Image (cartoon, rainbow, N blue to C red; front, side, top):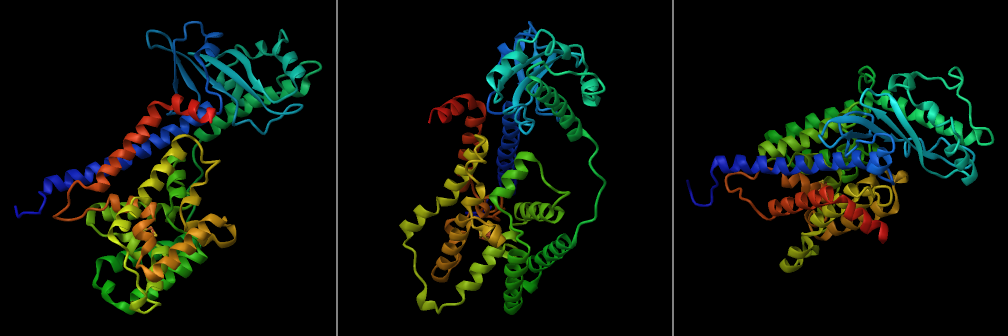
Length: 432
Ligand code: SF4
């Protein structure tokens, strides 16, 4: 083995390490998303379930089915039931003044053994009347999951609590809606639909990018310029189709939208697999509209306008993508995506023009202006999406465990810390 070359076994191992890091982070983001959905803003406590299942000793988030509730176990780790609550899924079902979060506990045979009001935004007296009515909450006991999924309130003769009918009927509708939503999510997906025009155009663009990347055509200067103009105008400004953290975060959390956006799903898959297996930075060099825009702009000014970035400054700024990735992971793992839009960490939403917020637009403008003076400035010093794609890229014979691999490990451990110690983080956020 020549000095400076890494053995093939070590290189393959490194590539699997990188894929493993990305996979494990994605898995934790996904499971955390489901856990946050199950918990809502008020996680179920064991004591709530023990009112109805006396032997309950542990609750475990159901990460498998579409019911998004909690499995209930006894002290011998035997499954003895299932518990779910109706918020946030039923937040639009309002009684007199607001929605109600209802706990529904099933026994091991999926028969309701208890219903209780957890909290409510409805009028206090109405909620009190429903909670203390001797029949209403008890009337749900003995009904099976299947029965609830098909139940019609009118035909079943469900009547509201006198004086609190709106509140009680909203609670009833909430329970049925919650069960039906789970059934609908589990139903057979709609039949396959052929992709639309935009998707076919993107498929064609992907094929052309692959041809450019793997043939000598990539060496033809004018062809590259024409292709970059097409990427900026067609894929970027007309199509608004760019890989981005917001897209990756959404797909990782709730699943790849391959039915709604088959071309983007394929582009994402190919953009990960090609660099991982072949060393080619397919997306960054041959497909990204923002990369193409920077490369085009970099030719605009004469060479004497170029600015040389001081090495110590460059060494510091190069951490920006890693910091943004850490921030994005924190947002996803702590369920803060509604408060902090991931789209604001990158310029890519700016290609949606009027639909974009101002933050991505300013990041895009700053990056493009910088690229006039420093070639590919944003790609080198600011892009978290590019950092992920670069992280998984094979680097040939001299590939070694380097700075990015340590950073990947750090991000993995940070995600694991939040995942396994979530209660502490949540308490800290709630206290801020
Ligand atoms: S580094 Fe970012 S902006 Fe640059 S080409 Fe890659 S994805 Fe696009």
